[in-house]
Image 1 (tube, helix red, strand yellow):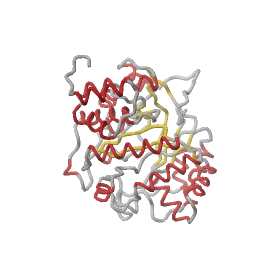
Image 2 (cartoon, rainbow, N blue to C red):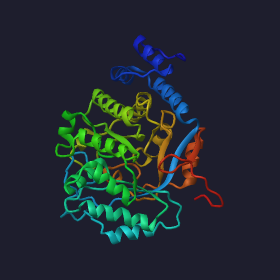
Image 3 (tube, helix red, strand yellow):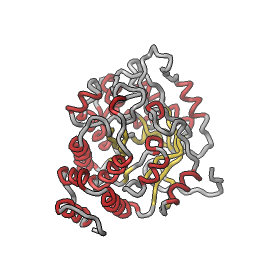
Image 4 (cartoon, helix red, strand yellow):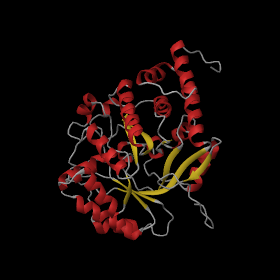
Length: 371
């Protein structure tokens, strides 16, 4: 295949991918461990072109992270702080309003709200938070709360998932991010986040959201103590749920970053592993419309490379409003990119930047000055 030396098994699996036949977990594992990185890039980029042509999507977004106080103490997390810590925060609703007010008239299309699972806040608190943001920014989509946050607040309220999600949707929550999935394999999950919600709970929350017509994203946390087999199991569970519901918009591989947490001795995987993760995700998740290379986590250089390995989305402008990865030692300590910088990055690899809303509808603008 284009001069690459391939084993017969890799060549056979690659031919299936080219023919657009679904591959199994075992076959994906063979590609991961045996296929040349160049081949994975070729296959994944071809699939990306089929899904979205030359388009690479971004949006104008901000994050609101209401608290880093959390009932869970995941070993990989550098964001969590005890309530007594001088580095802990817990924003009041007045503070949330102040943040939202600062973005009136600034052309953002999405507010992404995630944080710690605070022990003293209830479902009504989060409903009030969403209503507040929507009142101040009525034309902006609120994408809010990981499945772990949602499961906790809804369970605490004593209502069903469908009821709780319906209440949040009525308040103005329009989409759900993909965080909290970590790794689904129970033997690894029990080591890195033993007290966190289970894989089954994460999947159940997303399935319930899809029943409500709420689109969601999906993630994996990779590059710690999991195996390739664990990664493939994770992707297969996502693919199976997408087969049933069709409710996922994008898959976002999240790289374990080692600074400031109790798993730091593990270090971090190489960039080549990041590119394999992106490419195999694009190849295996044939029913996912989009693969996102989250630039605040990868950094701008790797994100640019990712666009040749299956990614067709890089997230958004962010305006230095997230601390989750900067606290874990990511290269982007103050993550912010102008529209001009995003579009320059995308065009540098011969692709076309497309501003999108949360639901991947292109945003048409006129009579404005690019940042």
